[in-house]
Amino acid sequence: MKSLLIVWHGRTGATEQMVGAASESAAAVEDVQVNSVRAERASAADVLAADALLFAAPENLAALSGAMKEFFDRSYYDLLDRCNGKAYASIICAGSDGEGAQCQLDRIATGLRMRRVAPPIIINTAAQTREAILAQKKLGAADLRRGTELGALFAEGLAMGIF
Image (cartoon, rainbow, N blue to C red; front, side):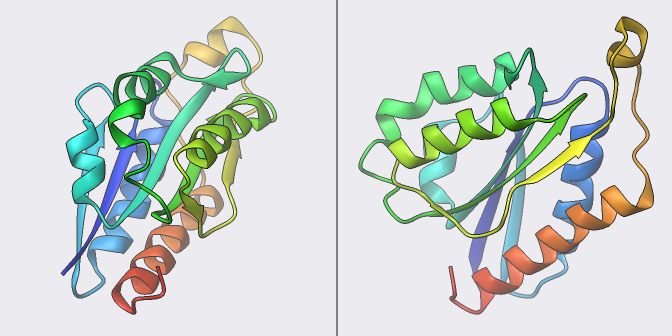
């Protein structure tokens, strides 16, 4: 049995919806166990126990959300030199381009010598006003399909021993 750990953070629903879509499709793959843990509760031990990782977070002020960054701050040195080659993928939900958060996540994963196995998914909600940024999000079918496909493909690759 292979294991996929999803470490995620979100406040307005978009990231949680994407995690749900990815998790559901990944869990449908035989011989893959999926564990979804909020960044506030995730630990280095969780990461080390997993065969592969999916990181999902919103972009806040052109960077990873504070809780996701704090997860990495808290666990980075316990993971250093212990995740070499471990497969990962990512989902960023943003009000604009999401590139700042994605770049930050990739730099952290590079430092841990992890291996990206799927192109990053960036969901642009186009939330640009205070009200839109703080509002609960409802993602469309096309965005959710991207999460579903990522979860299924990641889990299939894991089950087949590709990752």
